[in-house]
Length: 328
Ligand code: NAP
Ligand code: GLV
Image (cartoon, rainbow, N blue to C red; front, side, top):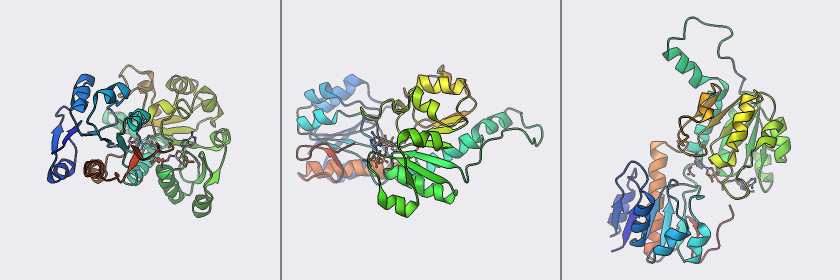
């Protein structure tokens, strides 16, 4: 019987699946992530772990985890895990691709629309008694339909966002490491270098993973290149955007606004200057948070663990004993 550490209460059948496969699941009961020493002790004693993007799994934690065979992340992004250190120790790392991109793309559009059409700020004002009459000048924003959308990272989520953009009659530009001729043909998306995408887009939506290449990808220079009044949407990872530079660009009035599901750090401290902007929408990293998708993500993590503990390759490997780390 294997011991599986699960770092938070999960939705769906994930824990039941582990138990049905004959394993013992030890679920951290807290609402907040397990403190580092708890995580370290738990991993030291576990054959497998299901962790969240809030758990940092680094080399020093893995060093103590002599029995550990798999770390299954309940997320598609895995920048919280030192994948090379895990692979070097023969530990599988898995993620949850293919089940959350549509849900995350839905939310990306929710954020884009909220920022453009001032949904959250006008709702807050109405609740506070600020709705006195129909006003021809209040809460004006840019149209979404017919605008130019720039997608940075045309992977699973970026592509799902591009599909939605067609329904809004948007012209869609994209940048990615590799060009995607099939998607250009199918969706009518146009490839641009990042700088050109920034200067041509009314909305810029980020969908790259957080890596050493993408950390700070959107800094002061890139923000300056954006069209005056353009809106930045980030549902990727907070550190892809230099937050100091973003605050500056908003202070200068160069940007029309920002919509951020991810920030640096998370949670964003309540005294952070970004909270003060009326044209900024901030949500607490919930783009994949539909009931069905979150349950499916947790169940995928369980499937990955069950496969490894049964001596099989996991269905969603990022890296492992027999795989070279996936290109991110
Ligand atoms: P994906 O399918 O792997 O797509 C990532 C895309 O980024 C790929 O098209 C890749 O290009 C491109 N890319 C990677 N490095 C790049 C670089 N240096 N410059 C330009 N493009 C680059 O991943 P996904 O499933 O769409 O997810 C993307 C990210 O979204 C995840 O890693 C995660 O951090 C984040 N996410 C956030 C939430 C949320 O709740 N807010 C939910 C899910 C995911 P190539 O195709 O050329 O390789
Ligand atoms: C969420 O942020 C994920 O990477 O799945």
